[in-house]
Structures are given as C-alpha cells and as structure tokens.
Image (cartoon, rainbow, N blue to C red; front, side, top):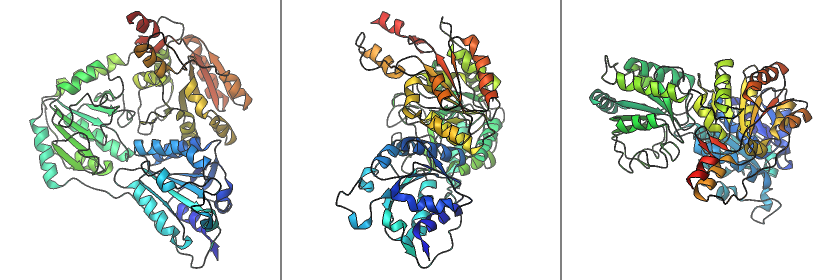
Length: 552
C-alpha cells in the first residue's frame, strides 16, 4: 500500500512539476518525506511563506505551468495569501497546498485551524479540501485544469494532516499531463475583426494579461509586422514584444507618457489583447469612458467573465493568447500600405524620446543607471521588481527584449522582486537575473536573499535606498503638504547584509561608480546586493519633493 502524500507527489511529477516552494511545516511532513524520495520534484526551502508564494507565482509566469507552493496551516497560510493575491490579479497559474488540522478536529478551532474556503474565497479560482485520499488524482486534475484554463489563476487545496498519512489501497496510474483548454475566434468574429481593421485609420494594439508563451509573442510580432500596427504593453506587461522593435510604442501603465495618452485618445480602433483594462492600465478608469469607450474597441481575452466587465467592446472575442495570436498571424490577410503608418511611426518616435535618460542635478542618476543596464546585459536577462516609485525608472528606461524578461506584480505588491529573482535563477541558473527593490520594498522579503545563497544562485539585487516609502511620500506631500507621517525609514547597510550571508555587497553613491560595481557583482559568482543611495527629494524622473512643496 502507498500513503496519500506519495500519491500527491506522483501526480505533481506527472504534471511536470519540478520545483515546489515553501516553508517546512509539521502539518505536511508526510509530503516532504515523499518528496525526499523523488528524483523529479525538488522542494525549495524559502524563509517566509509570503516569499515562497511570490516565488511560485514567478515560476508560473516564466513557465506557463502552475507554480507549486506548500505552506503549513494558520500563520503559514495567512503569510502565503500575499502571493495568492498576486497570482489572482496577475492571472498566473498557481497551486497553493496548505497543511490542515486532522479531519477529526475540523470545526473545533483546533491549533491554527482556518476554514480556507472562506479565507481564500475571493482570492482564488477554486478553494477546497481533500478529505478522501482516494480522490487525490481527481482533485489534482481539476486544480491544474482550473489554474490553466480560461483566465489563468491560483487554486488553493487544503490537506488534512491525517489524510496525508492514510494508506491508499488501489494505487492509480498518474493522470496524463493536463494542458490549457484552448478557445479560438469564430469565423463570424474573424470577419468582424477584419472589417473593423479595414475601416480604421489609427489603430493601436494594447497587450497584457496571463497565458502568454514565446510562440504567442512571435505570432503577435508577425501580425504587427504584416500590418505595421503599433503595440503598447499594458501595466507591467512590457515584454510581449521586444522594446527595440520599431512597432513597440510604450507602456500603457501608471503615469502613462503624454505622447501615448494622445495616441490612445486619437486612435480610432483599440485592439486589446489579453489585458483586463484594470485600474492601472486605464489611469483609474479615466483613459476610456465607462461603460462605453470613446474609442471603438476589440477586446480579446481568455476569460468570458472579463469581457464587458467594465468596458463594453464593439467586438468581444473569448480566446486564449496562443490561439488568438495564431489567428491574428495566420488567418487574417495582411493590410498592404495601411493608412496608419505615420501614426505608428510617430508613436514610436515618442517612445524613443521618452526613454532617453532624464536625471536630476544630483550625483546619482537612476535613468542613466537603468539605461546602462539595458546596454550591458544580454537579451535574455530577467528583470524583477516589486512596488514603489523606484520601479518607474525601470519601466521607463529599461528595454525588455524577450518574453519572460519582466517579472513584476500588476497587483502592486511590495517585496516581489527578491522572491521572483530566486524563482528566475532556479529556472535557468545561467541566465542573468537582476532584481530592483526600494529600501522599504526589499525589507519585506529580504530574507529570501538567504534562499538564493543556500541554493547557490547569483541574482543581483539593486536596492534603491532613499530612506522613505517613496510612493506614499509622494502622495503625502501632494495631498497633505508638510504633514509627513510614518514614511521615513531606517534601514541596515544593505551591502553588509549581503556580506553577512557570504554574498557580494557594494554601496554606490554616484552614477559613475555603478558600472564598475555591476561588473564586480557579475564576476563574483554570488548573490549580490548593490545598494544605490539616492536622494529622498527625487520621487520620480520628473517630480521632486521640493517641487511639490513649492506648489503647496
């Protein structure tokens, strides 16, 4: 006979899972024991469950397969909820397994007991508990199917401790590998799409969301080139087409550039591909009128529930990104000599001008540092970041060249950059990984630097240290001038923090020092931190505290 935990691990192996992120807990020790005997599934011991769940989300983004995370009950599950929320808002496939109290203790408020259906109900695509060990294959199959199909997202499965040690008498063959359910545009929709594009003079494509693959991105580029269509990336979805491509026109995200706002508003056809058109991509739902956009709109999205949720498009097509981009590249006849060439070229010119480094009159210029990184690092470099004003420089001045270059939470969760860097480095140890974090952002998951060191990984973490929660400070100075509360920070010497883990650490105070510091970090062969000490005054590339106070 075989215990339930062994069946669970076998099913995950059959689905191609290779990494499981988590923090060991006594409520699922049987699973860890089963993994010990596995030669295909490796448990990555993170330092905190929030970091583990964020790493699992990043793994799901990179691979297109559900990131796997195991945490213990109660505090472990509540810590992990940050990563589940990211996966839900980012449309990332993920499965969170939670060790649960024994079945005979349910509903007694036993030690660390929580009803996870209630806790995660709005935060996941499906939440349930496996009480019968014989049904493990059924639940795993449904979990993968749910996480991958339609709009991808997280699934939460609770595992009672005694169930995991139960014996299974009839050991089944593992399920075959589950692939996403595909949905393709209908002939009527294809005809309507072609008709709307034929009538347009200034079309603009906005891409984003989950479910993308390298194949889908290649087909997107083919479609754009065949029709000379300008492509913009939705919030933190800038890697769907190379930013060096002459048809990439910028980031339709927070603080959208004036040239791109003008392009959106002057467009006579908006083709939204995969993006949800949420708050960040629409400037707080102000870029387009609700519920009827002022711009004719085609919205293609894998989730039927998302089409028409806020904006009522002229043409709604439910299709996953692989199928949709294949349809665009292969089924639509190219438009020869389209009338929008000047419109597309002008938008590209705006992008190139907008991404030229702008630095304040201070010794350290983040614009120059980020631009230097894009010139020095190879095309396959993964850039990760969490949330904070420092990320504005990254999104504006770095140029993502391949799908999978960008790991950043559309949910705006702080602390994401370090765990995501761990996941990216594990996915391909030879690929350069650079994490950006603010001082406040890094301190939320800095312990995962130890995870990187434990597994011999060598990401470079650039900690932008300005001594404040920059985003909140900006709003505080703007809305409540001269009333600064709870935004100033005291942080450690981050270079010394790296050295304490036997990593590589440096402090940079001028832009001239950064290139050499980067070279030493790359050559160190260790996880590295470059602490970039910058002025609190410079809140964004174009906004300072001094300016805000002068306007008050």
